[in-house]
Image 1 (cartoon, rainbow, N blue to C red):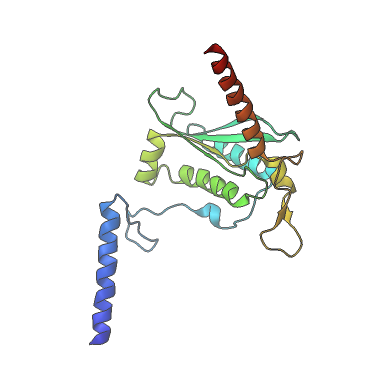
Image 2: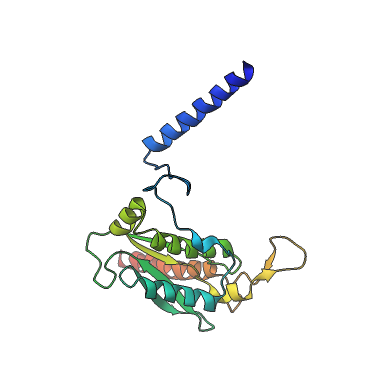
Length: 207
């Protein structure tokens, strides 16, 4: 009797949790053993997870664009100090046409520091997930159809190329910075302080 009581409590908790998820707009997806017509997400890119090198990242994004010419476009916004391309992948419908004026834009940037490798890989996976499931998952299709998505997996490819574990210390990496040994954040702060400092000075002079 006690066991049945506990089981009933667990079932009630599960039912309430499912109701809350559905009420907040989440869809409960079915597994591969579900009946025909169920949505099965394509996560084939997770079969052999690993960190791509900079060259492999460039090839992967090029293939993604080649296989999905109306959905994916790869941009280079410049080069690093060691002449590695700074790549951005754009995902939206009718990619070969100008973006609709009122279509919102969304941007994710990862790997600002060389040893921030997980975010880099997650953006690579996100790009593949959105593209692979665009045609078969209505929620993914609705998201991509209504948003121009820009993903930059690596802002610091030079630092990523050099980063590695140091000694036996877990989570302790060398070469967190850019090719010259400086932090991108420090560069941003310096540029912002120069810009806003001069702006503040000119406003004081004009007043």
